[in-house]
Length: 128
Image (cartoon, rainbow, N blue to C red; front, top):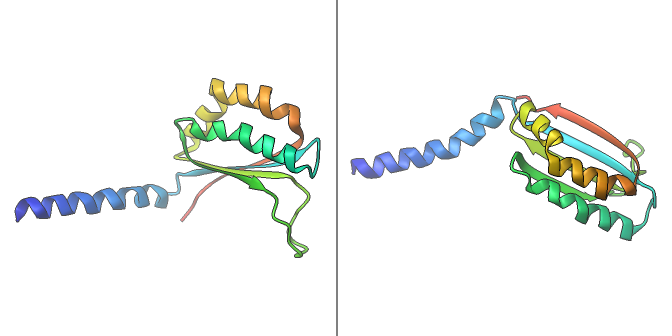
């Protein structure tokens, strides 16, 4: 019985710890909005998306989402871009490590930058 309680307690704590890490406000969101040289081209958007997915495999990336613009009829929504990316990191240092990583630099310079007309980046730290 004691063993079962200990195992149950350990499982409960394992589930709570990630929530506590997120609750401390330390996670960082790296948002990239991209306008392509071949603006509006589905083929160019897909090429950018496929090339960028390698960045989500880097060890410091907790999550990585990439997709195309979602058009909306609300005036507040900017639908002028082609591709958006949201990458999540445990903290600011992990983001800095990502930006300095040789594979990140290589993918940006060789595979993504040649496709890009303009990019805007928003980095923010989560808060409670």
